[in-house]
Image (tube, rainbow, N blue to C red; front, side, top):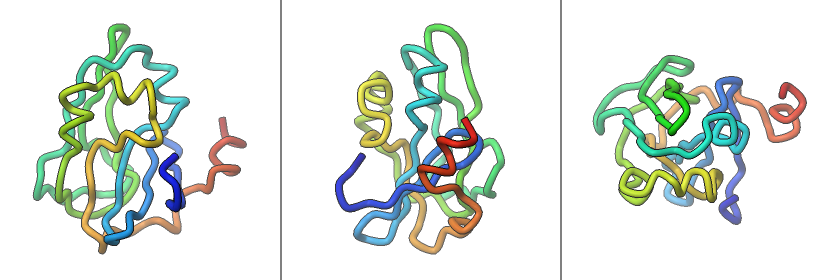
Length: 123
């Protein structure tokens, strides 16, 4: 995990953590990457796209399968992690340090997410 950040988790196996600048980093959980296997491609939501919490917003593919990527929060996408897109295997190596996209600071819905203990309990 990235030091100093508090992580929140969706039941759809994505995480969100608010960065120092207030923006929300979004990635997939260790459980999700483990179920997928070797990640080979990520199709994130478009920059400027408005996401609704819980809806499909992208795709993540592995050598075994493809899986929808769900928005953990509602908000506007402001950037992508180009390192994760160009080397998606980083998601397997460090799922909680490798964010996929970033949402504007005013993203909503964090109160609907689980803390780490709650997420692990529902697994």
